[in-house]
Image (cartoon, rainbow, N blue to C red; front, side):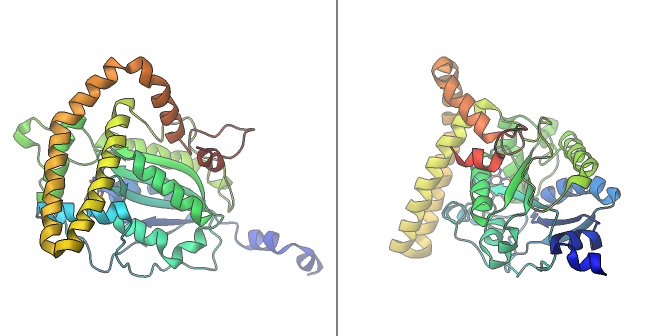
Length: 339
Ligand SMILES: Cc1cc2nc3c(=O)[nH]c(=O)nc-3n(C[C@H](O)[C@H](O)[C@H](O)COP(=O)(O)O)c2cc1C
């Protein structure tokens, strides 16, 4: 009894709750992100940690498949400008001190999806202060801008972003420009003309995610609140292809410009002019993909020596947090913030 009274409250808490508590927050529209999350979580479940899963639910669910170009592209300005939908209040037990939080999100128009952005702004997200967070980001293959926004949001909330696992759709980039929209807009999962790959996350990526799950499970005894060091260093959790950096950086500027333009159109002419702005964006995007991306690839080849230091620096910065941490140096979150 006497010892118990002399123990600092933190120690007492650990004594009575030696079981590791992991909170999983997720949103999945088509089921892709949910499939990836299942692969990551299975080894953790088997390792005996106590998983609590909370789904982020928008009050008005987004339709899947989207069914129309207009509905799909209409959310672009909101994603870029952070105009978030209302979500059901997430039920997170405030009395639990989480040893790890896993946040599963997807990329929508180079930003975290709207339900996830809504959660990050919700008062319920305040509990993240001091929590170690592993993010699982699922996308076609342009995720860099969204990852920067995610890191910023987590930093603002005071969370420790310890790892980022990135999962991309199968097939070459040119093929995913067809397979992903075809799936998202009309729900077609078949292999077009037997020539294109299936849309979405393939089996190779799913096994890659499972390996990260096993790695986390093997280190579960090290899960603890306030941890800042990554678990997945040197395991290729984030793989960055240099050739996609320029198209994404330019796309990001173009999206921002159009997001503001579409808003302006709406303020001048309501839904009708907003629609006109959205179709203008779609036309520019298609031209950008068909003409702009090949031109940028050629530009990169021609000026590779000039561009190399910039691309290397950007790549190194974006490999965080998992691969920017070295034992004995400062923590990855702060190093990322320096840039
Ligand atoms: C509205 C919308 C916009 C998207 N924008 C991007 C994007 O900018 N970059 C990208 O790589 N993937 C993008 N995607 C693809 C999704 O990230 C990808 O399909 C992911 O697997 C979705 O997971 P979920 O259906 O389980 O939510 C977008 C998907 C949607 C629905």
